Length: 376
Image 1 (cartoon, rainbow, N blue to C red):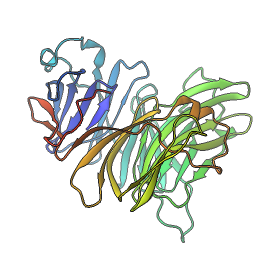
Image 2: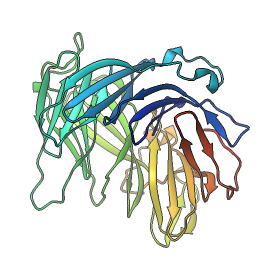
Image 3: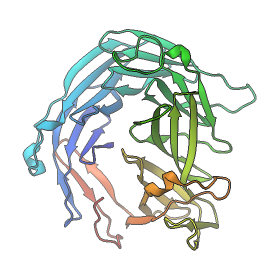
Image 4: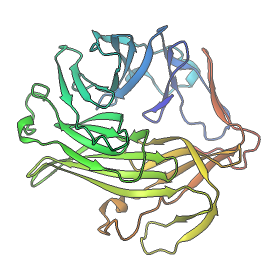
């Protein structure tokens, strides 16, 4: 289940009924009913990826079944600002592409890019396959291999980033040049032959899943800079918020900056600082905390996660904002690890979940909730 454009929820149940829910804000109620504005029944198929076009007008979803894959498009501009009940089945999933996947059973779709009609697939931790779903043109990229003595460094996500493909792995992030023939006509991107493979390692952490923002590009005197933000969690160390910049000229490079973090551990001080680096620190002793789910906003500065303290069944939904001034800080990362600021518990309930059926969607906040409903 995923949020789309801060308004829709995309879900798929165990029998692969894919539903798109329109959930506008209801600031005065703790119970929010909604109805699907689009549904698609695909028994035995699996929802593997989704993305929105650059103009936010169309949602694209990818589904797979054995060696087949399909791309469906949902035009979002047809939904007007009317109550959710009026949007029931108003939109539709339109089949855009139907193609065969590469033969190995171990290959999976990790990402789709609607604007370039590209599908990014990976085979375990050995190769990346780039496929154009309109032309069926494809190419294979061999990934860098790790030393045999190192722990397994599997792939968690792939993302198109200008002339590069960003490969997020358990212990590193790597940038591979887009193969020849996949660049968009009329672009001024460097030729693949002039680009090198880039790599940054994350020492002493294990990131088994990441949440990514949209990729943004900016122009500097030396060339294009592509920026993406990442939110990741290490089970034993905490939650990390990174900014990743990929520069193509004059020398291709990748830089990774830790913007904020939240420590997790048994009897570990939790330190939170304000926007001012020199502000007094607030230290609170917490018990070991387990984070079960986390997500980063499309811009990359707001995040939310669900956490539970060791020995307790209560869960908290915590929101965090990393201030833009943090992006321009010149303080070396070795001086101090920045902390996530303005941590705020939105809801605290022993039972609060999204429940959905084939007809409606409702968020229920448990009776143990001690804070009012908050929209964000």
